Length: 358
Image 1 (cartoon, rainbow, N blue to C red):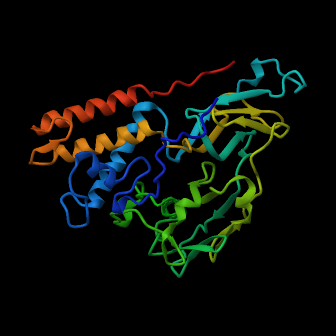
Image 2: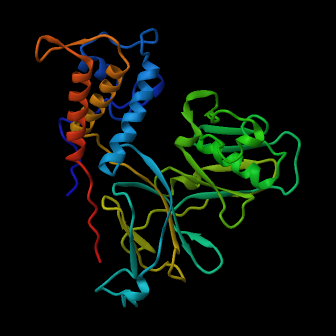
């Protein structure tokens, strides 16, 4: 049984790494642990530098325990369909699924895409998705792609967020990276870009496009961008996509299914069961993109992350720091080692084990 919450959970979650606030800890918690003055924009290290250390510590926490307590998108996990070997046809009151898959992560917050190969293309069962098929020729003029959700509008402008003078497939990759706000690894050598693009809503610097949408290049047509809403259920069908070039297909209204639908899931365990819609072939015929992450941050995770960051601060410091437990000065290496050992002990005790069913 999944624990919903605990009085000891870390709840001060207002993520802004630029000022030292992460999912698992904050710059204030780190300075309090070290019993030093609070970090600021003028200290060494600054709040922003602590924010970078927090990012690294959170990644170490997730990698060590095998799951995340913050929302992480897991893209394109492929599975083979085993329904043919289960003797499960037809679906009946005795067994209401024809096959299932076990995702690599539990605690599923959102099925962004649940795609099954049905002979000529992947059919998406789970998401509110739109498509932008790009023109095959260079437009060389003002081109704007806009996504709207509620009162927010995100606009991607050619020559600012993407470039259209290298062909449709390169442009599609550029648009995808801009929507996901990630560094354009595949195209930077052509465009000369040195950083990820940031796309905010209506000039609101605190509202980012990647909080609401996720994009990929169509695996069957490299000149088409597929955009999925990250809103819950069918809410994403109310989003809109517009572009003054190319061909737009509006957002679908696919949604999470219940037990009597085409598929159903046990999200806490990361299991998806297929009932009426399933692949037509067996090998590598299911592709899933999803957001995983526990909705709560236990005290142990907060404690481990804080100690990991504190250890990094000490590693780069050149002054001894007073440890309250002993009332005496302890050399930096000893204190660093103590914090690291305690953090790793916590994480080793929380390593995740996924139970498979057959």
